[in-house]
Length: 296
Image (cartoon, one colour):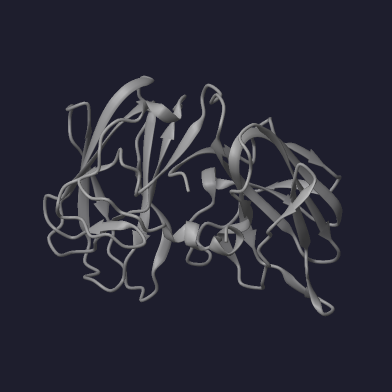
């Protein structure tokens, strides 16, 4: 499975929405344990038949939204089905648990080339369908301005020896570093809030191209439940081009710094990343494991 994807927000004009029940939802980033919505809003559909259509060049595609079905007779409302080039792909059943970053459907069994995704939605009564983003593995060119998703296990991420492998990479060792050389204009680090360690606050710092150091506080937690898709920091936009970012953990046996994946803004090509990991992780990030049912 590729460790790099193109990320498509629900507001992207390349996505076609059919049906009269669509509206924009700002969502609720405080719900559940799966983190905030991507870019803070979603397309939502209520009452009737709705369709999402998206054409792409790639070998896999994933659809994410917010789950929270309501009982409707012996089933739940809303219902959905996903199709690529007219063939059904595995869709994850919903539930009444309200969670962001819910994997709606996914497939990695596509041949290289152009494909069309269709998501059919039926909302009968009080249920609402929420669509947040798509991610696909490109097989052709990457459109200008694309956001790339890079998994923690990508060999371009260079860790020192103070990181521990797991469902993400994490460290609580003072001075631990990870760096990435990439093409783009912004960087976002996303991980997990781990609870089987110290819950005391800490901080991290980063520098870009050897420039000034930016320190970011890491709040402690009182929760006993692991929190996924936690955004540790996002940089402001910088000049698009080749850059190297270095991230340092400043805590000392405090709340760990976890790295599950990063987002690179305005990253035009998948082959523009360089570097090699000091270790060879083979585990899958937690949010990928969530829809492993669809890829087996």
